[in-house]
Amino acid sequence: MKNACSGLFAVLLVAVSLTCEEALPPFEDPSNPIRAGVLRTRYVLVVDDNSMEITLTVRQQYDETLEGVTNLDGSLTIAAERTPSVQRTVSFNYTSLISYPNYNTSTKVLRFDPGDTLIFRIRWDFVDDNGDSLKNSFFRYYRDPACSFRCIAEEEAFLLTAKLKLFDNVPAATYGPEQASLCYVTGWVNVCPPINTSYPCSYFPSSKVPCDSVSE
Picture 1: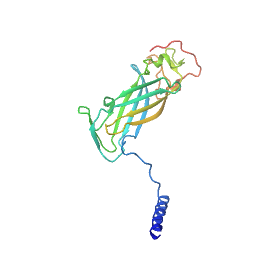
Picture 2: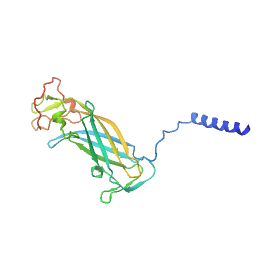
Picture 3: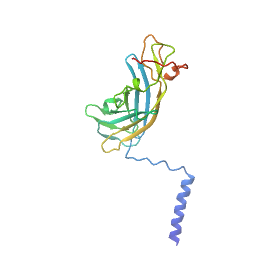
């Protein structure tokens, strides 16, 4: 009876300790050290480029160095919220890296130290998986009141999800969904006032005059 009471007291003491001290941290699976990631988008509109730029930043979040041969294979899926069947999946690998402090592109050996980051950059030209350009079949245009040679589309939202395989013995990590919204502009026109692509929807006309044709 004495042993049983002692065991009960020990259990109660642990429970009280957990209540009085800070709560246990959320469980994190150490088999997946690259779950910490951020997806960001930027609309690019210049003379020779009209696209969405997506960056995926992945951080090594554990306290052990990982090292091995890897292609850093991943995929990015972009789906239109208004019409989810309109989507594009883009594959990427080490050739999309723009920041890689300890990756040897010749040997494909990655040393991933704690706190290190990898940054991938992917561009989407607004063509879906069927090969159809959204500029012709999806966006809904209105005349830009500041320039008759240019049209601006209604705001559209897209959901982005990404997957990345670090090493063969490390589970693939998934990121997202993240929402990105923009008002597509038909193209760069030298004689038109420039558009700040950080806020393209601020140029959307208050008086909606449809565009009959779209050309870039």
